[in-house]
Amino acid sequence: MRICLLLVLFLIPDFTQAQTNTRWYKGNTHTHSYWSDGDDFPEMILDWYKTRNYDFIALSDHNILADKEFWKEIPAHPFRQKRFREYLAKYGEQWVTYKTDSAGKIRVKLKTLDEFRPLFEEKGKFLIIKAEEVTDKFGDKPIHMNAINIKELIKPRGGNSVAEVMQNNLDAVYEQRERTGQPMFPHINHPNFGWAIKANDMMNLRGERFFEVYNGHPHVHNYGDSTTYGMEELWDQLLIRYLQDGKEPLYGLATDDSHNYLEYKVGLSNPGRGWIMVRANELSPEAIIAAMEKGDFYASTGVMLKTLTATKKKLTVEVDPKAGVDYTIEFWGARPTAATEQEPERKLLKTVRGTKASYALRPGDLFVRAKIISDVPQPNPFQEGDLEKAWTQPLTR
Image (cartoon, rainbow, N blue to C red):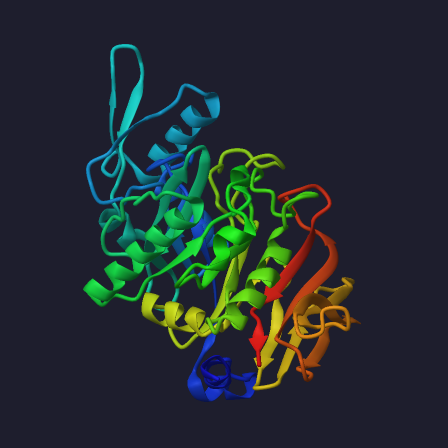
């Protein structure tokens, strides 16, 4: 009942948008830089996103915050050396602090978040959210989780199983939120990276609200294999379990997980592949997080929506179409079948070819979410042949 009430109150129909003064904000919550294993300067990265009409970015380097003195040696690779010259030319000697040793190696003192934030942030136009990729492991299994809008560094907590590592790090984010009073949230990253996280590892987690249904890194196995769920099927299986257990629904994000900015091709982790569109009343961390926790956002790799409405029983989507492009809208959910009687199973509930469609929850439906697929190949995709898509958040009974 609590979940239904939240959806009724907060997944606001579009006809109320003018009254509530909400709008859509485009952002990416998974971005790397020279502060860890990215290959570019934060300023160059933020300029890339801002000039391409993103509204917010979370810089999320591995187990570090951009708040201390940090010197980066520029690799000898020609692309890296060229990028340094471009960085120096763009920002100037007064901004860039660097040293060249007797062997010709260049070391640059990276600017902190507090230093470069004023160059880019504009009220209502562009926001930088402080974040970290909490990078942990169990044995040889990588377990990564982004912590969004944190105040302080979160050190990986480890654990005695994959599930325990995830739970310990989820708890660490919520403990900081409780202690500081600052809104923040974790999202579990690329479960199939290193084939590390299985569905059973996530079934009993407490406080798991967000995960990456799409990640643009080439090594994360978004689509699974013959023995491991892809991200969409994983999402639905977890939704079935969470909702049966009385938990709040799990929401899906699309992210870049960008590391590579100097060369663009399949096989590299480039920016611009996946993002979220959040409907909020202002461009602030508090408003963005509040909207996301209500499920008032969708994930995209290229398809944009004109309208998205969710009432107590009905989900309606309308595409903002590109000329000459065809769209298919799929409604996925879970309901009992004759074979399983009372046990809900993942099911494609309805398919519509066109730019607008609705699905009304039927008796027995546990949830419904929409997936919108265009017939246009995604530019510079995660995998050759990928089409531009979007995913809404689930509407539950």
